[in-house]
Length: 210
Image 1: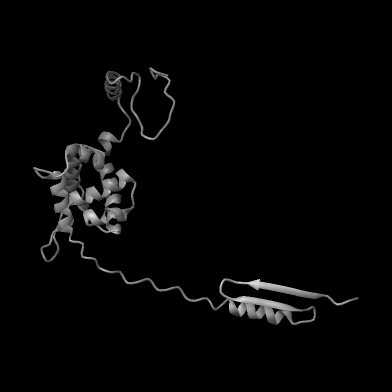
Image 2 (image 1 turned 90 degrees about the horizontal axis):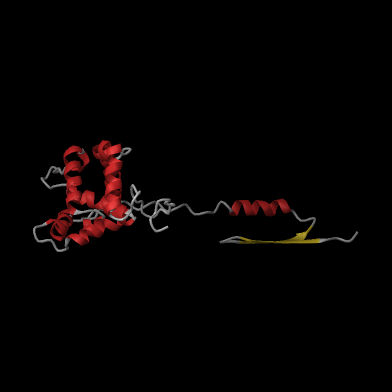
């Protein structure tokens, strides 16, 4: 019987292994070489140490106050409504309730007398993430809040809303609520509608134009 010849070619990302030989070659030694080479994987780089960034949080609060909350704000009410997804008086009501009833939103001072982030900054960071569906890092440049703190603001904000407003708003509607909503929507040209949910497409059997 004639002899046969085998040819193997292995190509890795960093190394190239070639094996060409006859049936009688010591294939075990070749496999051992591959095994040894697989252990030459570099160790992952150690994460860099956290770098302190002086964000000047006071400037972030002043920017917000001058742009939206001063007696002569830079931006009018309709732009506030667009960017915060609510009217200013509602936002300030939320800020006032959270800052008095939820410890996280109370402004404090450190050992040097420097004020912490203001309730307006923390609530704005949370609202902007919810309103735009953006990352926690997106509010850093304007509000002067880092990504990890912005995520904390969002978590505390949602938990605080449930705690402070849950019994009043996050509940099933009463018969009086339903009657009021049906009347209001009928006056707007939508008889038989209780409410509207954005980005949802549900059939409405009582639609007057269907």
